[in-house]
Length: 60
Image 1 (cartoon, rainbow, N blue to C red):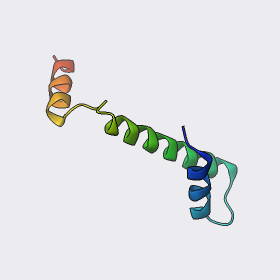
Image 2: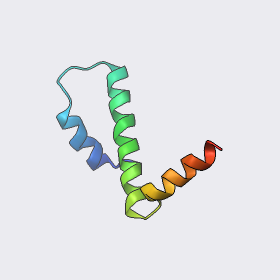
Image 3: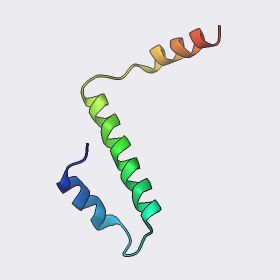
Image 4: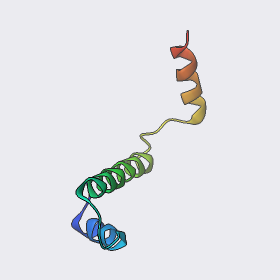
């Protein structure tokens, strides 16, 4: 979830004119990045080694 303050900061970086689709795409990207940063900060991620092991298990 994005706060109003974060949203305001992001809106300031947008061009003066943009279409709704671009706005939605940018906001979705910002939300995804914020979610991944939060997951990383709370150690909800796996190591690259663990990822390699999982991928290897899928291919069997």
